[in-house]
Length: 149
Image 1: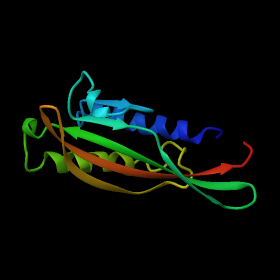
Image 2: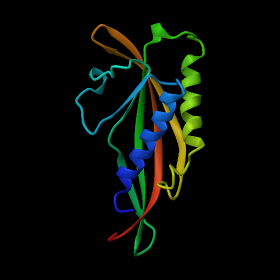
Image 3: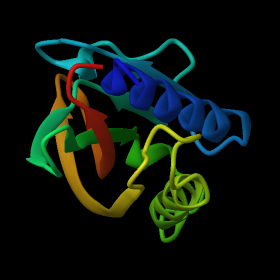
């Protein structure tokens, strides 16, 4: 696997597509850079998932291999005033997203050492006239990189 970051991100996007198909989210955006991704709300509406660039840690496994951990933060953006069931909709979205990644824990083989347990943080965000709710799901995807491949 010469470009693990690209392959991993493609599989995360495939999982977001499944969440969209299943009606968990309305849209998603894959960004490599943006000063404020919340200003780039997708035309399909909210809830919206935003996947951006990874952070990477690496440890040498042996002289020829590195274990890399790619950290991807997926930001789910919701409009709290549009929730049909305000007491449970956020939790339902979190569980659906976690379940999607838990059932595809190797990301179709790109995460050779699997995905570590996800972490979730929630926060309100104000942008212009809107007050939004953001749920950040952090995935740490471990893979083996053979040096020189």
